Image 1 (spheres, rainbow, N blue to C red):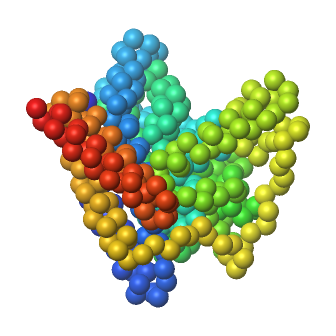
Image 2 (cartoon, helix red, strand yellow):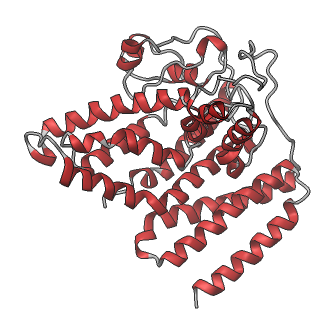
Image 3 (tube, rainbow, N blue to C red):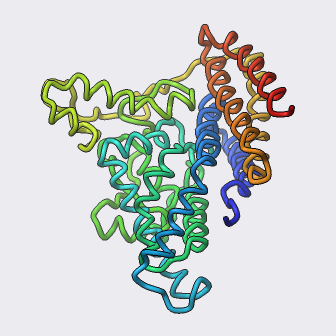
Length: 375
């Protein structure tokens, strides 16, 4: 199994976020809110920690397809120009269609929506991801194995496609002129994250914008963007973020009178509302009138969560680097503690009644797990 480039880039992610905060302060603007950033990064932690338990299987499945089902062997082998060219173009093209369908098909949107839930737009939002997207995107990338792209080349290309998209999640970089005809930029990706009706379902590209221009989904940034989802999540909890839309779909399916529509709910567009279930067109929004979800937290709570969150990130980074050398029980115990800590930190920031008892229970469970796995 190759290097985990995403894990290795974690320190650089935080350096980038720090630089963004400093530049924003020098410009006299605020692009980060503490609780929202904790939720964003927490979602990334969930993706990486949960993904550990199926990442190897997905890559092994891709390798099996390459070894037993490929129909082409590209000239030059794994290090050849043809292989890398096919991987770069193929990953970008297939990403476009995965991304587009993840906005057009409800059960795919249930995974991808996590990335769009933040009502801010900054480099922390780039880390806001869902573990289920690892499963849904694999199906789209699998054909690369059939056309002769080896697993290490595919994995490396897909990782660097993801890494490229980190820098485009910022409001501090303006429009970049002719470059935007070719590559994805912060301006173009701001459009993609916006809930202004004119911007919905635009700019799906990863690195290149050729597919959006070719398939009619390209839009330039013209009016100020308002971020989030048409129906707000109204929570900073990264655990609830992962399942909220699945719960909404299940409720919509249950409330739908006709059986056929109960099934269609999962396959139709997120904008589709079956007969008998209320719905409507997305409302017009503007920065002047839009009110972001926010829950002011006491300084002591913010300080405590800051320390706990630093520990969460440190443990996650260590596990991602060394999980192959760790017993499975240790990895699983660390994952449980990290996930529970994310949930209780969010609850503390939001002032939930159950937050303090849950945090105490989390510490007790962490101690019990540590004693158990270290025996």
